[in-house]
Image: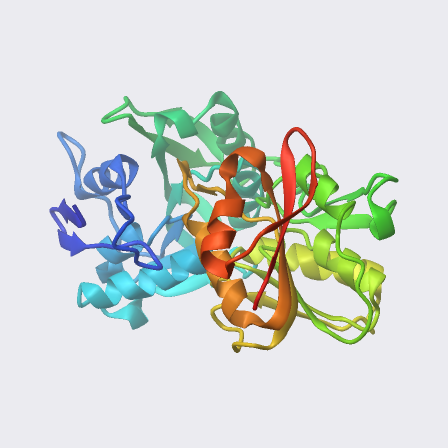
Length: 385
């Protein structure tokens, strides 16, 4: 189940954090297709990987682990991907020091000779990353993208064409496809439109009319999503010095609202996305000022927060992991919140009605209260006893 076999070797790979109940693999047919192409197939010779190899968007470190002998640079928006890569390198006896891990917020290598791109779910993130990478490729750079057929659209190919150069695709194999691009250093690609800012509507409480900043790839980066809009209308009215966490903070609008409503609060913005935490920091600083009390953490939920140190957790949990629908992330967030909260501390959650979070909260906290609802969403409150 967990073994990826290539001509480079056989690799025992896991997702992070490892969950024995999770039956999803740490790689898929798109990763296999790309690795087979690099090994050389049919009349095509193996790719020359002696230069600087950059792997963008690796999901769980499968590509970086398989190519570890080439000393690649991995670029990802995901803290969990970085952790998975470290774990998988160790599991397979690879030299972890030979793989350089960069976030999407860090500058890429000055010169890129082989650029391998796992197409992300977010077209905006792909656009932003191609703009960031374009100045570092040259006419001889080998550029290969990969993804499942359902992830690669005409708009995907247009981005490669517009930002890097002439682009074509492979035939589909096991519902996966490759993208081949020939860089044109002289291409007039225009400016990177990210980060993007917009003004909030007038009916969302204390943050009404304020401007939020969104880096590419965060959920609903071009507008306020309806779930967060509903949540902002029903946040708890609290006063006094307390420690508040915006868990899975996205662009930070919820935590910023909590800070503006209670200036004595100290807010911790947490997300596993580097793009999200950068967005939250920009949003908070623009609206709460340099004197606002806040911390910003890229990490695995609340795993880095000491137990019993938090008064309030505000959470809009995701229910997708890449293309898979799952409540595993929400369950881990809720359990982490329970551990981080002081006795009497509260977790407030916004979620779609059909997800049944009230059942999960009762199992973890022993209680769940409905605060507000509409035909699509519920706001729930759980108290640590």
